[in-house]
Length: 217
Image (cartoon, rainbow, N blue to C red; front, top):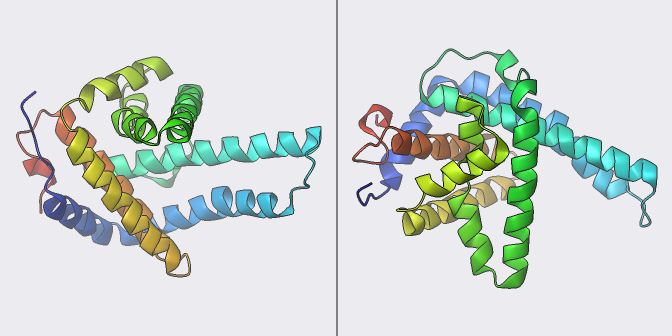
C-alpha cells in the first residue's frame, strides 16, 4: 500500500455534514448509550464499597458487559451512517452473534494498551493505534477476535504517525466535549467515531486519499 496521509479538515468536514444529516437519530443513539451504558457504570463506581464482594464484582462485570455491547452497537450505527446505508435503532441491539468476538477482542485490546502504557507509555500508544480498527472487521465480516486484531494490525501499518495525529485530535475533541458540562460529548463522540469509521473504509477501499472521494463533501 502506498504511503497515504489523512486530510483531517476534509475528514471532519464530511463527518460534520453526516452528523447534521442524521442529527436527530445520532443524538438519540448517543443519549441511549449514555443513559444505558455510561450513567449506570459511573453511579455504580461512586457507590461501590471499598472492599468488593462477590455480588459487587458480578454487578461490575454485568455493567461492563452492557457497556461493551452498546459500544459495539453504537460503532455499527456510525459505520452505517458514514456510508448512508439503511439504519435503524435495532442495529444498536441486534449484535448478539458477534458480541463474544467483540468482547474478547476488547478485553485483549484494553489489557494490552493498559500494560503498554504502564511500562513505557509509548508501547501502549503504539498498540492503541495499530489495533484500533478491530471492531469494524468484526461488524462487517463477523471475524474472530484474533483475526480482527490481526487485520487491524495489517491495515494500519503504513499510517502510524498519521493515525497518532488523528488520535490526538480525537482525544482533544472528546475532552472539550466532556468539559462542556458533559453535554458536548453528545456531539464529539459520534463525530470522532464516524471519523474513525471513514478512515477504516478508506483504507479498506484502498483509496488514494483519506478520506476517500466517496467520503468527501
